[in-house]
Length: 296
Image (cartoon, rainbow, N blue to C red):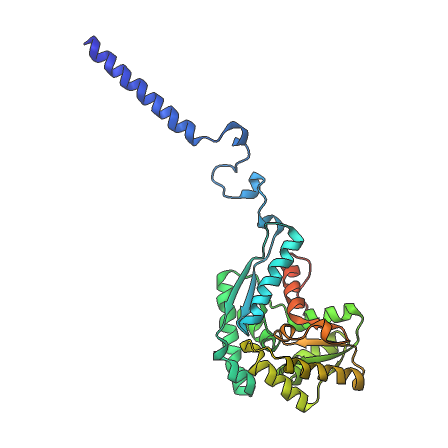
């Protein structure tokens, strides 16, 4: 009987030792115990841990794929810009929905009312996907496709940061008042872009002549959006810019197509170049950080 009591006592002691080991392993070391959030919370800010939420970073929703080449530039610039502002290892919060440009490219080139209505539907559908994914606001990574910003806002209720607004503000800051608008025929010939520049920012907008607009449109849709960058096309566009500087008194040029900065650089022309891809991407980061408002 005494032997049985001793065996039972030994088993109980072993069980106590095991329980103590398990409980001890689950407890935080004393040095870190009071740095953890209270039970029932998952807020790392309460632990003093540096997270992006400490900076109230908004989620950028981007409609890309128009074309994917400039979308890649947007992604790079936005991440670099936010990292520069906040330091390592920060990067931008970005949701991107990249449309298949083949689904809309013919319609955009023709730009009839029926075509534009179709493209609007595609852009609104893309914006709804971004809203469902948690985007706080939207940018459309294309000067041409910003023609549908009002449709997106009306149909989804999510704010859109307009590329023409960001560009007009940047041109004004430079002191340039007479500027060339070079882009697709939609950008150059429809009023949605020029009206913002002229009526809101009091800029004098100079357009290429009809044959120059046709040539520019062809370079954009037949070459740049498919990654075909030709020296002769750069020379042709630079010739247009130089003519408008000489004959019309232009003092700057807006590259109003997000693929144009991939071909034309500041070193190619005498007047200041306004790169709308960089301007728009930087403005998106500023809005995401609460450093600017969306103009209306």
